[in-house]
Image (cartoon, rainbow, N blue to C red; front, side, top):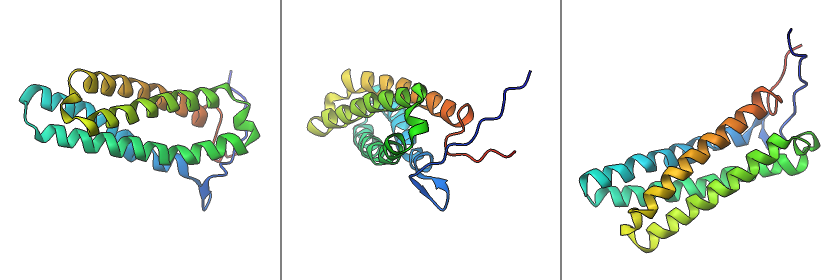
Length: 153
């Protein structure tokens, strides 16, 4: 039996009808996932080049993530249908934890590049796992609740 069609939920943080949050998250997510690879690159090679790469990836991921989150927060607090979704709140709360860890990871590295082992790598791996969870919850918002998409009748 087919599920009844869901009415779409419009994004308030949009440009020409296109929601901004899903557009803005790609670079921070890519940076934080690449951070795991650069940490492993340092672990395997010992080349200080990977320390600098990791510092930059941690910074781009953390700061870019906080910037991208502003569009999501605007939607969460201004669209009542999103506020009523447990998935929306779960997505937001896990994202805040993930971005807080990413920020801590950048700060540890900024103060001491050698902090990559063991804490930097551990935080990078935990952040990557949380990104997967946040992405799954975000996918549920889009595909199950039609947040930010137009549903054809």
